[in-house]
Image 1 (cartoon, rainbow, N blue to C red):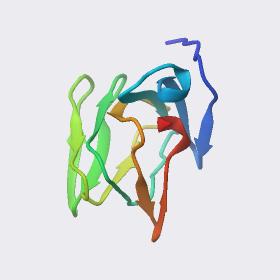
Image 2 (image 1 turned 180 degrees about the horizontal axis):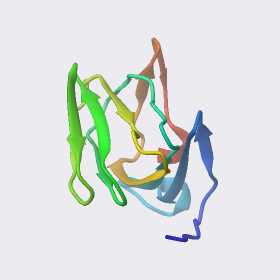
Image 3 (image 1 turned 90 degrees about the vertical axis):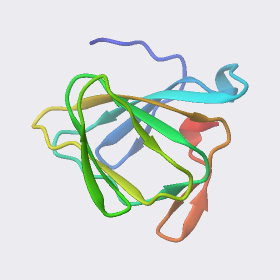
Amino acid sequence: MNRTYPGPTFSLGANTFHPVSTPSLGGRELAVCWLELGAGSAGEAHTVDREEVFVPVDGPLTATVDGVERVVPPGMALTIAPGELFALRNTAECPLSVLVCTSAGISTELNGQVFAPPWAQ
């Protein structure tokens, strides 16, 4: 699926975030972005301070949440509660598109560092 994105693109390893509705793009309460997970990529375990929802679009999303592995089929949602330790993986040999929705101003803790992800501001 070809998309045109209204905002800047942010990369973290093999993964790319494309914000489509955030405060910097005129939104007020929510932050919505497309997350492109690179083929075979695995993100680092982290927590968030607000609920975050992931909806894989073109393949399954593998997640480890508080030590439990889950496979989320396309079109279904993975909801992460504040404080849950989670990591996302794309086990496919091709990129995976995931629609992400959270609250504007969310904070993430990764490797002991707390930061505001730029794709949600």
